[in-house]
Length: 120
Image (cartoon, rainbow, N blue to C red; front, side, top):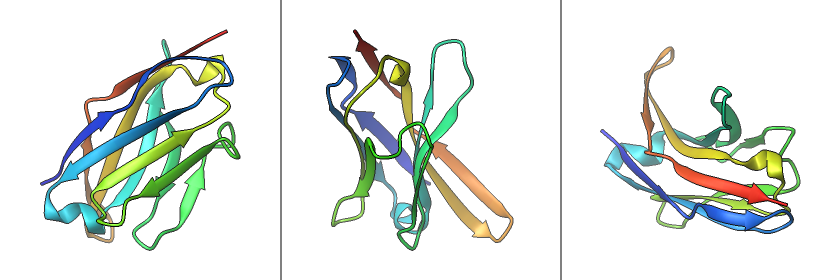
């Protein structure tokens, strides 16, 4: 079982920066695939950035070069540094832990979400 709590969202002007945090509890988190997703108004949830169990990162094309996903040294806090924010980055941001118990079986744990609003 994994519990995730996000923080760090808020309102910012275009071009600004925010850093989101996701604090995890539960020993399984360290062995889970981790990621940040977002849901813009009126749209479905989409992948923003992921971090695999062996440290491989991936980003959506729309955020490459602007966003950075990272994990603290203790391995229980996931971050998303967001720079050069655009209006289209406005969304509710969610932290995900995808925990595999078999090659084709996993459980997904989601945080409650944190709102990011970018204005001109």
